[in-house]
Length: 198
Image (cartoon, rainbow, N blue to C red; front, side, top):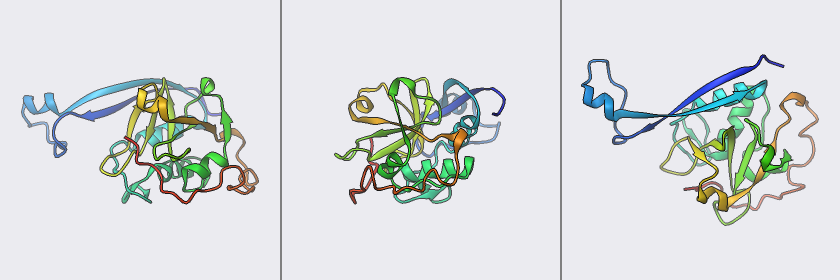
């Protein structure tokens, strides 16, 4: 078990036009005022989940790309989750939200912990979108075409209406046999595309 971590994670929301970018310290005071506004989330995270959350937060702002699995090309929702688990613990999850739900353990929503997966119906079929729970009712995900990795509040009406459930990857118990069973046994893949959240 890794030592206890107290993470203060800050996501930034761009307030100006999409073209606003980081400039030198010589930019005007007015430019500095309108460029960014912090959205701070204070989390208590222990063990491998602390690295998972930290790695995910480092990709805030990376663009959505359908079928994408890396930072250079961009990510879709399940590609983002897959990349974070592979980078953090060496575990390769399926590249499909529905299949990710099938190979992980069900979790009561009242017992969510940072690093858990949260699933939503965003395309008129269950488990069509996935994100990583951060704590304090927030999750991080790659939403849809034209958007980028960002943090959302699960308590917003849009997400409450579409919530399908939560799953957990047993980070403390990962072994080669855990994912050996058929990923299609519980939730067969429907063949439909995923994501397209708000």
